[in-house]
Amino acid sequence: MPFTEHNHNGLLYDTADGLSTLGGIRHAFTTRHGGVSGAPFDTLNFADHRGDAPENLLENYRRLGKAVGFDGTRVVGCRQIHSDLVRIASEDHAGKILWDERPYDADALVTNVPDLPLVVFGSDCCTILLYDTLAHCIGACHAGWRGTAGGIALKTAISMMTYYGATPQTMHAAIGPSIGKCCFLVHDDVRKEFDNLLDPAIDEQIAKVGDRYSVDLKAINRLWLLRAGLDPKNIEIHPDCTMCHPERYWSHRLMGEQRGGMIGVISLEG
Image 1 (cartoon, rainbow, N blue to C red):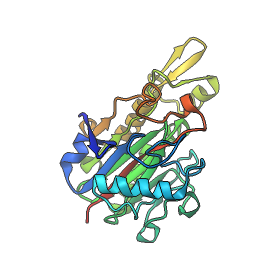
Image 2 (spheres, one colour):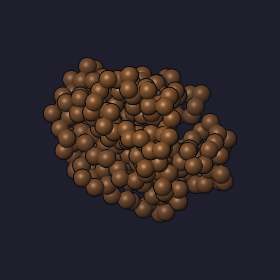
Image 3 (cartoon, rainbow, N blue to C red):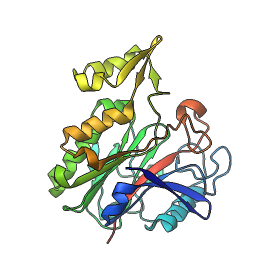
């Protein structure tokens, strides 16, 4: 299924068409356009440990919430550490979004609390949003290459099944814009982390390119979701490579440390 671009007074974000048709949630994958942050974070920045002013970040959340239809003052995230750790977000965590306030060192959150938007950050890494229509619960995970190798997408789906009674048959997922196999070239040390999984299907998503290897992070995360039992038609993958489109996205590989960051966000309607 395709993704749809939205423009709300200059604030640009995408939604997954499949998730949008389900009802019961609000979600978005952001771009770098439509916020209030100044250079080098201009303008819709959500990376808050690189020098941007907290008031800019909070205003960006407020504007995004107004555009998408969730309360931007209630968002919660985790201090992402490139792990495979999944944690539960509770009502007590509402609004804990600035770095030092976030409740966990982890890379994924799950919840069944209405109006509690879950946020995951990315600027090349995969941001993955999950929703179970029957159990009425959601998940959000950040999958860099370490998290992808660790199967964090699978573990997030299993956490939703364990804590909230979600089932693979009623679970849907969307993988947001991230670095593509065209640009994610790594050396042998990273390739070996995937080799250690001893999984031929994952090996097929890694190709030799000169003296390096091209790794398809989106395809590998899709495989993890399939291993969780999701129906292939219920998994959506954004086509854009963040490194190929610096005019629209932040890219860590291309821009280094002097940059902003995007988010994937999902919230249960009340």
